[in-house]
Length: 105
Figure 1 (cartoon, rainbow, N blue to C red):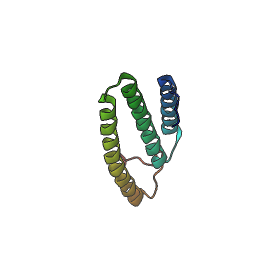
Figure 2: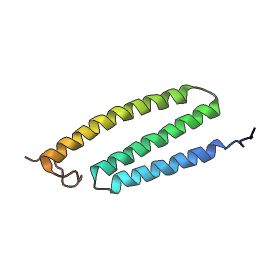
Figure 3: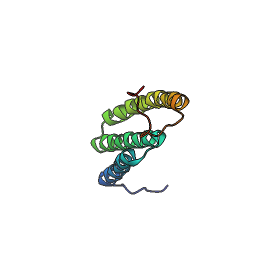
Figure 4: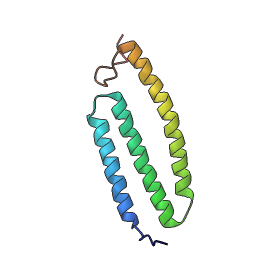
């Protein structure tokens, strides 16, 4: 039986912060709506990593419960978001964020 050394929670929080930063930079700099959407999903998953880290560190199930609800909301968001992208592509023939202006006729 192998003994797995304990990884300090600070390393998980640093990883979560790095992933969140990559998601923010990607969401602010990319033009493709699907890539922006994936960056937002990356930010949600980094928050889930933080919830699970604090849950394990504090020996409580609250963080796991929050992470479960975030995953459920992200799944619903993915379904609705992809349906909106398909509708935008059919009407405008592009999904670039710069070229989509819904307030113009």
